Length: 495
Image (cartoon, rainbow, N blue to C red; front, side, top):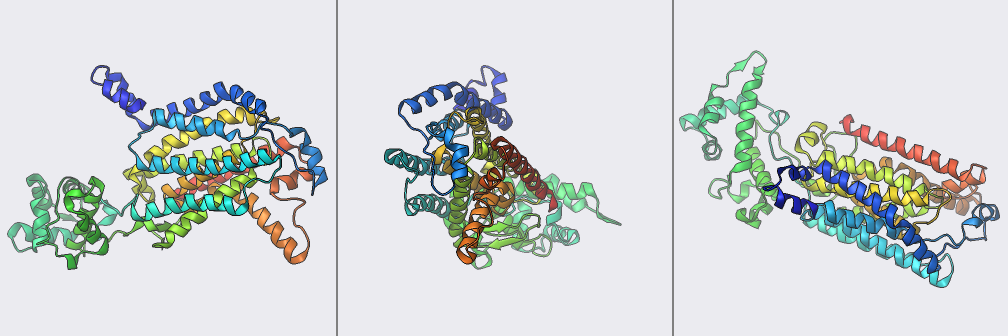
């Protein structure tokens, strides 16, 4: 909203153009989310107390743990609604509301928050720790993943390479030969079609390109690539008489079937790049098709796992796994909130990188042009999360409940999916993987051998029962989460 208001006022007050910049809006979103929680937090906590929305502490199973946590009984829960509302207001104020990725992320965030709210509400009505049945909770998580997965498969958020970089050219001499043939009229009709879209100055630069002892000089290469990218970006090159349908790959056929005049600028650019690869097969590298249903392996350049329609199942698995993992981690004051903030900040940083064509190309990561607004959402949630942590730090004045933990898990999972860095999740959210893994190992060990690996699962309770103070467990888990975040960001350079 602020973006649209300030841009309308720029002709009268040019300084307002600063709000066009992503970093400025992200900073505003972070501070807005934080101060909304800080200002309205006491009111929300008093309201929850007046409604007697307090936490119930189980006494059965582990007496020692009950002794450690019994003082928390009656602490207001469902506080996740505080940072959910703060994040939404902040995003509405600072986000670019025409961005579809922003709305996809908000949709999963709110939907899983609603599932958590129902779970918390039922617990409070029953005055017991049992809320929604496991089947009902899974159904809500699966629905969120299914809706997101289906949309992404049939509405790609990323496409293959479009502009030409130096590493895309595998034979400069072949290019020069094609240009020479186009100039004297002996080239194919497809080469002629491209040549016709080059500016006269660009044609002259291409013909003047002379090989040196180490291939074409850098200035020649720059001129040729600039010529290509200008034509790819500004022209409608496709002509059915020049490129028959039989010569097009499935991706190009799908784009043409939409109607060339109906394509978005990004789709038109992609179609032009495919035509370029068809026209210069010996000179231009083939780009990877169907990136939206492929999964990139972290640390490896252009190594993809093709999933096709199974990508929907993959998205569901991520949403269910991460939202439950964050839910399991929410057992100590500030633990889940702090660890989530670190994961959100990491994926927000990745979103900023992969939304830039130059940085994503340099780092060999998938380019997602619309991911920029995920950076704004991440900043808003970061600020709101810090505001919530102000009241959730030990001794907590409010708990997030399933309302907050499921929403946070959904946000982290969605950011991983929408940034096309899905397999980076086990590192970015490493602390949640350890927590969920401890539960899986504990259950598997007890059912197969009758023995427990940990004193109690999830893992944070194991360390509590070893005698660690609650604040020490929380701080050390935050440190581990931060180290995981640094490791995940370093993998971007491994390629």
